[in-house]
Length: 251
Ligand SMILES: Nc1ncnc2c1ncn2[C@@H]1O[C@H](COP(=O)(O)OP(=O)(O)OP(=O)(O)O)[C@@H](O)[C@H]1O
Ligand SMILES: [Mg+2]
Image 1 (cartoon, rainbow, N blue to C red):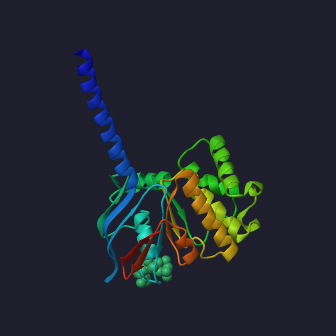
Image 2: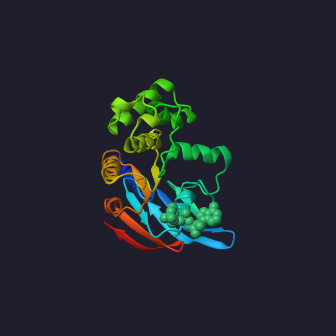
Image 3: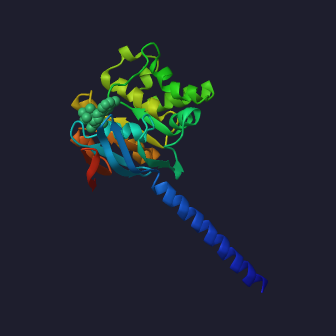
């Protein structure tokens, strides 16, 4: 009797355990979810109802002709710009209405950014540039410097820690920017034409790095690119035209 009772109880516990895991899995799968995103500049509709989701360990590329609204979408999803309508959730939490310090904290801790131009601070070394988001997050300096050095090592820059940006090549500068985007272990890295300023060899190297970061660290990326080679290495390609996604392709 007692055994039956415990077996029954255990099943319930197991049931709740699996249900919780399953829910976690669903949230985990749909890490970043945006629905019905709209944005207009003056009278011009730039985003006209975009739905998108990005999962953990996923590289999603956004392609499309100039003016399609790719950067605008990336900025809105990265909370750098506000949508006029629609919702954005990260791990099931709504983030589109966050403001001020809460928004800055979210961005600092959960999102990384890489742009076409590296935007490294010229008077700081590679190591210091990588540390900046960690300083903002008030991480202890010693641990932060260790983490920054490790990320730079992962990105093949262990012998460039104390170089200033103008002492680095374009490819190296962009890899420092990648390390800076990763230092707070963000859920997702937003990249707007990250290879747009690089030659073919450096662009290829950066693509391989994104793939390695996905495979080895489960890093998710949402990348706007004109580079077909980069797009072809992603999990999914979304094609934008006139402010909407017109085509989706899984690879
Ligand atoms: N701040 C702004 N004010 C007014 N119009 C803007 C603003 N930002 C973007 N736009 C307009 O929105 C449209 C989409 O711009 P967006 O930068 O998102 O395009 P894109 O797809 O990234 O293009 P590209 O491939 O050339 O970078 C363009 O017509 C652009 O002129
Ligand atoms: Mg753009």
